[in-house]
Image (cartoon, rainbow, N blue to C red; front, side):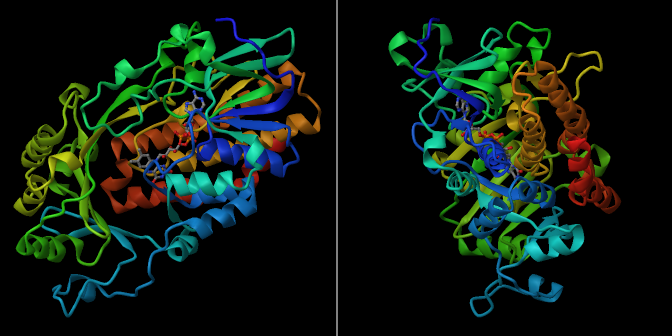
Length: 488
Ligand SMILES: Cc1cc2nc3c(=O)[nH]c(=O)nc-3n(C[C@H](O)[C@H](O)[C@H](O)COP(=O)(O)OP(=O)(O)OC[C@H]3O[C@@H](n4cnc5c(N)ncnc54)[C@H](O)[C@@H]3O)c2cc1C
């Protein structure tokens, strides 16, 4: 495809993707004085999309390194949980009109009998006390908006879908080709679907993109691919390499069935659910712990019950991909009921699912870019002047709430390394860039292998000891040492 260059300008860094990781990277670069940068995003306009994301101590610590202002802004924009000091008796007290449940600051895990097995605080301060940094919940869109507003408007361009990246040795740059009027936003790997559309058929055939739809090409000394799990940049750079099998994400073996609201719940069922399960919690997980100890935690369904303005649920299932394909409405309800039945879930929960309005049902298979690769594999998170970060490098299911948090660790690492390149004025030093990218991969990949193992096997949920070990490993790390190593 012959694409006209509409710009002669050479950026130091172009970032593909204005998600949390791309934006955090841009903010970190500007904070370090690197402001000849641009962020492009395929979204035609920034709009309210995405789920709630928990930012945990490691992600918040990384964000503070990226830029303390960004950390403060995100904290301010996050959802807060009412501070209520409830005793256990209060939490399990019978709920009546005179005695409404108080908002709890805990996310509780219960067994099928409603007994609390584990709980963790939702309060920023409690996490701060344990791990030296807090936790916040924030919607993906609010996170994106908050970070985007910290950047000059003309440095974040929506409506620019990157369709190709080309290393241009003769100009010492990487060229990024973009279009702005693609007819469909195809992403079979990261969308909630109602089962009506076959998202694969929406994938654009890049070769057939007409000349009229091409808008611009940008050139940069370094391209940071933060374009999410369905990364185009990743696909392009792996297309003809020995890493070809890693170009597209792989089905993780897990999927979600989501019902945002069950509006008509008979009073009797509602009070059973509130007494036995919610007991004042806004969110809880129910699992068959007996089955989990017989099989493995990851082999059992888990249901997240959410009680904010109304009751909804998110069911995580270990199922083959084809069991979801084409399913919507009643078929999803039936699949959910069948899986809950197999795992002996109690009647109250099955009744709730049975009452789901078919039109409120969504499904989402979870995909993964595995971090664990063969030792002899060539580097897989960079190619020449291009580096992959966030979900584009290591997207995974959200069970340990680490996707964005790990992406923020990437942003911290990559901004530090690019800053080293800028300080030494090594923008044209291919070897220095290669060495920096190698460092990134050496540092980040082993940790991502650990996080993905925790996500897929759910081992931290198998006992208090495992949970504590995992929490220490992930949340209490001190990044001073990491930064010092990167700066040598
Ligand atoms: C249900 C659910 C719950 C989650 N909960 C948590 C949680 O609690 N904690 C947590 O840390 N993580 C969580 N995650 C994961 C988290 O949302 C992701 O890991 C995170 O958003 C990844 O950020 P990113 O910037 O790498 O990619 P994304 O957020 O996917 O952003 C990618 C951006 O790139 C743009 N883009 C894509 N392709 C192109 C292209 N070709 N050209 C230009 N732009 C492009 C997209 O429009 C988008 O803006 C959850 C995910 C799900 C699905």
